[in-house]
Image (cartoon, rainbow, N blue to C red; front, side):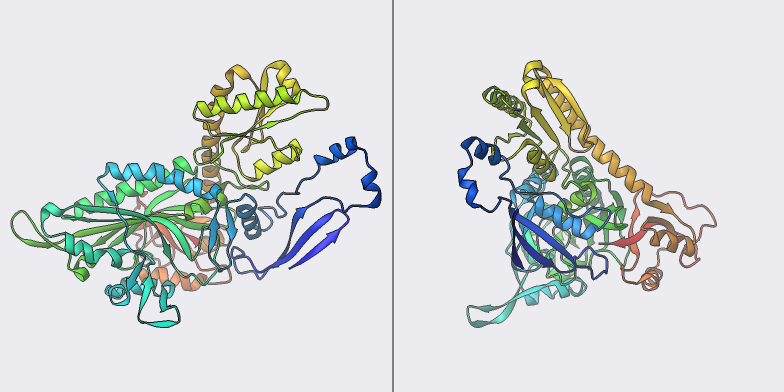
Length: 547
């Protein structure tokens, strides 16, 4: 990393190591960050007139913009977007990231939707400690084997070694369930429904990526216990529907509700359901959120028993379910473009930015007053609007700045707009411009924001659906896989066959695997065989490479 001085500015040149989204390529890219672009002073500059100095003042601006196109290098593009749009900042511990207000606002918006919905279901919030002892963590063997490589351990206090190492939770089943056993005695103690909003640590060593794969992340995790399997099954699907709504109604990302294979289900659970998204640019699926039925396995391990209304002893049926800050990364990948972030209005911290556009000799006071009035009117109507009055940046620079940050709608007000009592609205998703009378401002803005939300979802769904390829044979499967498709294939639903598919497709870009079997299953016609084994097919399943 070194500073580079030129006649036009001072730059910091740094070499970024291979990006985690490069899918196996050891590519490196030089990134150039411009701190400021003020000309270096020369002797004659001091003699410039004050009028010239004022003209130069508006040019005291930082250059910005994407240096990599989404189609050219998706990994570098993603890294630029999340930093330049002020979503994250890199931290000095690999795999850990600072979530800036732009990102935290989205997380809080999702929380404001989800938390009241689960409370309607009788689920209450609690908080359990971050730490778990080794003997408790090891209690459920299959479960800990699934997480063992990712568990971080505290081994020292100051300079002294701890007598017993303490784990930092990778998830909270083993943290919570000893206390479920303490609190549940009879059928009147059921159901027990708890949720916690917290952070967890999974010490990922391969390809850490902001939001998508980090060593520490935010999530909610629900843990519930029921007297019957029927109650547990019902809740699994109710929670899964809430996760669909998070993605489709708020983030404008289409997802598929489905069931995971035995090989891909949650370690120690009975079965796992999920919502699955797809990233067309990389041809990879991505697990959006999961809702697990744990069955009675953990109840057996932790002695979570109860006495029913007939005085008979039984074990509870349990669920666990979670979505995380990964949701934000999926949204960025799906909607972002070569100008930067594109935010759905429902989750945008700023939905509308108002920018004054003063021409030469314009009445700047009147323009500013009109802008302030527009912002006040919109905020009063419940629209999240902001005003950019910075005088040392040109309107064009501001346009690029707010486009980079993904603000859904821009309002421009200049002298001609004042003369005509109108404003100009510019959409972030399509770039379309329309002039609107000031008297209709609130109504038109609300209408366009709804249109942007719908358009983002519909566009993303069209792109996703265009990638789905239905196959029946192994050759068709391999062709579709190499073409980065979301593959829909008949399958015999055997663990050994999935393992064989993984082994046969393993390569630089990663192996193919099952993503999910959709809950809405097409009919399996007589004579349909598994694409991989030739055995009778039992279900239709989505396959592909994944994050």
